[in-house]
Length: 205
Image 1 (cartoon, rainbow, N blue to C red):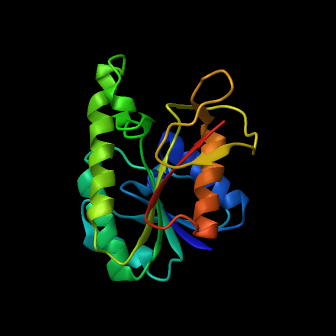
Image 2: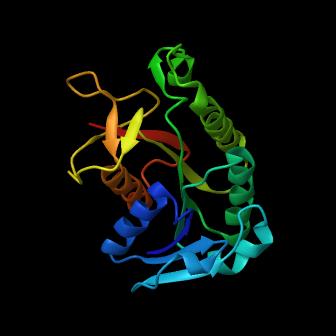
């Protein structure tokens, strides 16, 4: 597949890039500073800025799918990308979201927990707003909002994990965790299968 990746230089984006290339996909990484990405087989680097949709048209031309792993004003970025993808005719899109909006009980979100770190609330609220932007969008794009577990960090690529929806996944010890490597597998699986259009999914052990 021809995949366009936004955020390829980020902590999660780099792992998604590795996973996509390992599967033999042709990846175009859209970045503001192309010098930050080293040359690799099947990797193309394009200069562009999500906040300037007109700069994305050439990179999106002929693409089969797109992935975004971004930070900043995620709501406006989500809206800008949906418009750009719709205009380019790219239907399949996976957005790397957050866990803050997942439910720990009916109607109770991760971010509602009194112990949720104050320093992370702004990011979590931005990702919740991005999810609402996806749900409200009329763009002809089959988006998937991919949430990690409550904790995501570098770790073993096990290749075995569970796929959920709007509720937090926990292991036998009550922990909610996914490695970045296994999260990347989940993201690429959704891209290849296109099996979660206009839905939120989450990955965990």
